Image (cartoon, rainbow, N blue to C red; front, side):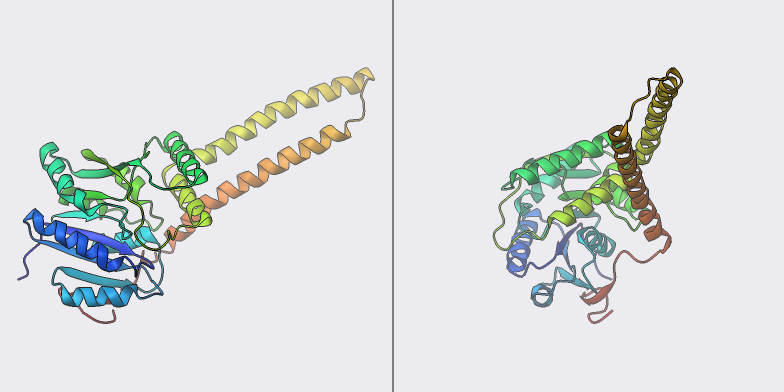
Length: 317
């Protein structure tokens, strides 16, 4: 019988060949000081560089490492789910594989959890590190919109978390395919505690988040936790209906009074405004329909193609 570890550290990697060895070494060194049995679960999210080769070697050389390769790039959220599904620990710690989540804070997470009897300890960003003005503005706008639409304030939230077995049992009951990890954790509730941290600068490599991937992530977050955009379409429709009735009454009065004037510009502007509103409404509705479409297909969140795992098969899955 294999001993059940106290902690499982889940780290997703994508195109991080320059950081893999450093991240694993730093996490292992920190976990050794904790004094509890642990495992480190590394997920390669379909990298095309040498990330998987390095993870394989690390898993062979270090008994505490378990490595899994996904069949393609499913995205960070799905990679996190893969690691959490494979975790055997009584508590699960999730963190990024780019060294921007400081591993040396893990003992602090454990201490805060024990002192507060918390189910979840979350790393809260007090400084987002080196970001462009537009990145900071975009993040603030996204979290402000999400807070207004869903009621969950995720300002400063991160994927750097420690979650106990009760929280993990509840997490595993959420089967949706459109995943927004931070929002889902907030929705579950339980007792939360926080540990503030500053986002460390990248040691090597560049961020894999493009402008369009961030937009997609933001849309996923909003549509996954609020139906308010759909209600806004309905409200806008009623506002325009009232406006149309007033304008129609005015036009009819002018016609009957014999003072009607040519309103070509007014007609064109109204057509443009109403047309734009209709297209935006169709687009918002389409976003929700696409979420439903992805859910009803019931496809798996991820597919593991290879693994180096002492608790399972060490080959192609």
